[in-house]
Image 1 (tube, one colour):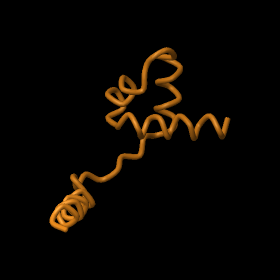
Image 2 (cartoon, rainbow, N blue to C red):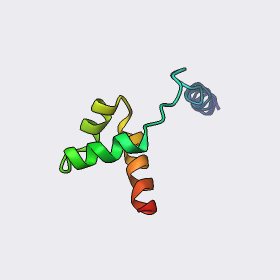
Image 3 (cartoon, rainbow, N blue to C red):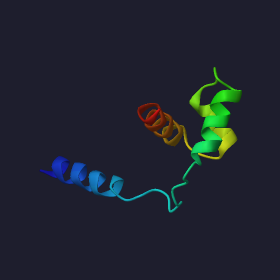
Length: 68
């Protein structure tokens, strides 16, 4: 049973948020302009230019493709 206790303890530790950074809302017009200017760039490049995360850029671009 000692193994089970250690696994549960490690799960409890990983449930805590690792950062207190507030989410950043990327302006839609800035994202659209960046896509027009750098149409063949990867999301990590857009994230660096727009001061966002790769995941945030992916979700925002996916959302934009559903609207347009």
